[in-house]
Length: 393
Ligand code: TTP
Image 1 (cartoon, rainbow, N blue to C red):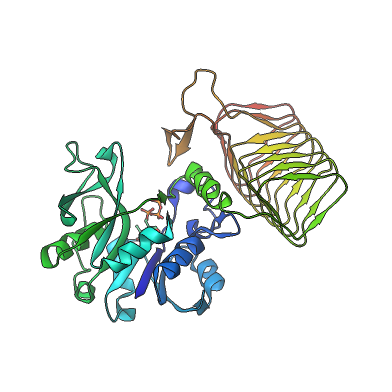
Image 2 (cartoon, rainbow, N blue to C red; image 1 turned 180 degrees about the horizontal axis):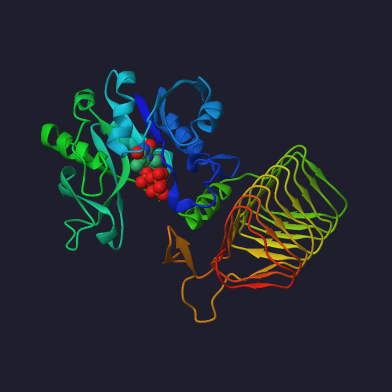
């Protein structure tokens, strides 16, 4: 079956991390986010991938090329991001039978996606405690009878989990009218498919929609949690690597370092001496974590440095970030409330008791900077020596 993977979005809720990298290409363990989606689709039975690209399209194109995971790959360009149905319409000329549609920023377990593909036409459903903030499926047995957005009185507890298998005829049903928010929505296509065919709701065991920075951390927690211990790099002296730790070839771990998995230390990374890295942590390519640094549950993207006596917990640091000596990150509020973060100008709850900071590409802290929980440093932001940062910058 052909799988259309939507990867044209701007990822505005993920800023500043998406200022130069499209959201689907942000790192999750050892590969970009969308590669996990693609891998799962192939494992579930997709025999062709069609990526819809737009924002920073070249990054997606060059990663996947014309073959990936043993299946042919093609690309369709969506010039303006006018919605998910509009994105699928951009791929129309590539479609020649029943087809799956997957969001390039959603993760599923492979068995569930396989069940979805087998039940075609079908839609993925995820059981949630409070459906009021989701698109919610109404059903008759396993058959979908409709979908309603963010209902105050939800018909079921089955959230639309953003993965569909449509019949070939749906190729002609993609030109839906603009919604109230001015987009052409795939859920309106689903509405038409439900009218014309018997669509099965397939409950998925695991689903993560990666839209905001803490969800990128959660995606890494998920995929790093699947690592199997492998030490291909150079582990020197008494470095103590506990549990599921991967040190890639070309990475160096110096004496006195303790790593508690799951942790992935990518090629070119240099850790220690005398650092403490706790999982789930990703040290991207060419990162440096130096003496006296404690790092916990953190994503450090390629080229970033935390070289001297610092603590960084539950945080996401973009590419080429540098934290000066003595930089300390708070990741817990004393009032016990969930940490809040700015997303598109609004302070919103991460739903996490522990969350540290987000640093855009190239951000630099000066020595002895203290960063409050929930701070966002924009790309290239700097701090002054000894500064206590309590507002985004
Ligand atoms: P969203 O997460 O709704 O959009 P986005 O990725 O641009 O993020 P944000 O809202 O933070 O700006 O989109 C769901 C999926 O569909 C995602 O994989 C991107 C993709 N998409 C397109 O390919 N084209 C589009 O026009 C839209 C709106 C989304």
